[in-house]
Length: 68
Image 1 (cartoon, one colour):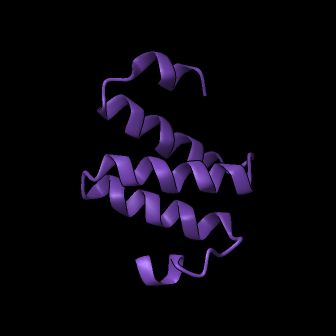
Image 2 (spheres, rainbow, N blue to C red):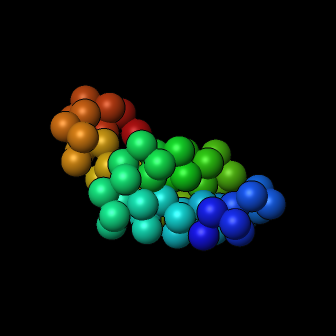
Image 3 (cartoon, rainbow, N blue to C red):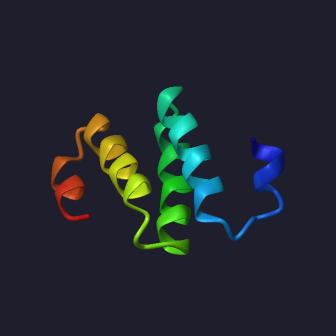
């Protein structure tokens, strides 16, 4: 996955999938980085927004989660 991301693809879905995989593996800081990139590329990507909120909730960053 990281190899594919080295090319910095302009596809929100690629970054979202990397973020979701990191979330599943409990690598939250990495998930935040990838999901922020996905949202920056496509602010309407609701799946990325929901995943980002989930990461913040797992980190007990409830206020930040509500501000998305």
